[in-house]
Amino acid sequence: MKSVEEESLTNINELRKFRTEINKYLDKRENELLAEIDQKKQTSKMLLSDLKSKCTNIKSDSEKLKSELPAHEANNMHLFVVGKRTMKELAGLQTAMEDVDRKRKVPRCKFHRDPATEQLLAFKNAIGRLEEGKSTSALWQQHRQQEMKQQQHKRRLVTSQKGD
Image 1 (cartoon, rainbow, N blue to C red):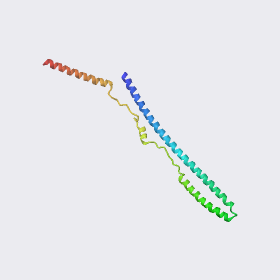
Image 2 (tube, rainbow, N blue to C red):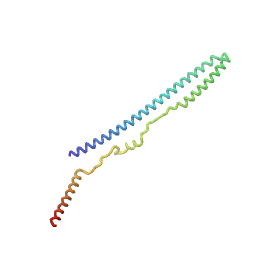
Image 3 (cartoon, rainbow, N blue to C red):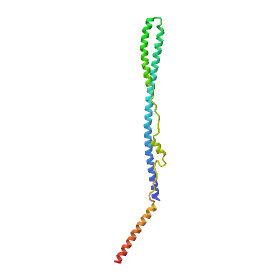
Image 4 (cartoon, rainbow, N blue to C red):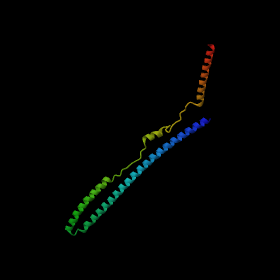
C-alpha cells in the first residue's frame, strides 16, 4: 500500500513539475510578445506625432503665405516679388507634403496564434499520459514462478544425484 502512495505522489510531482516548466515558458513568451507590441506601439506613436507636427507646420506656413498675398495687391512690383518667393516656399511645402504622404503609413500588426501550439491544444494527451507497467501482483507472480522453477530444478538435481 505504501508503494502505491509513493508512486502516486511521484506521478503527481512529475506532472506539476512539467506544468510549472510549461507555465514558465508561456510566461516568458508572453512577456517577449508584450515587449514587442509595446515597442511597435511606441514607434507608431512617435511616427504619428512627427507626422502631426509636420502637418501642423505645413498648414501654418501655407496660411501665412495665403495671408501675405492680399496685403501686397496694391503694389504690383512688390506683389510679383512676394509671389515669386511664395512659389518657392510652396514648392518646399509640396515636398514636405509628399514626405508626409510617404511616411503616413503606420505599420500595422496583428497577433496570430502559433499553429504548433494550436495543434498541441487540440491533442487529448497534450501534457502527457500515464503508461501502465507491470502491476505488483504480476511481478510477484513472475517472481513466484521463477522460485518454483528453481525449486524444481534443485529437486531434479537432488534426485539425479541420489540415483547415481
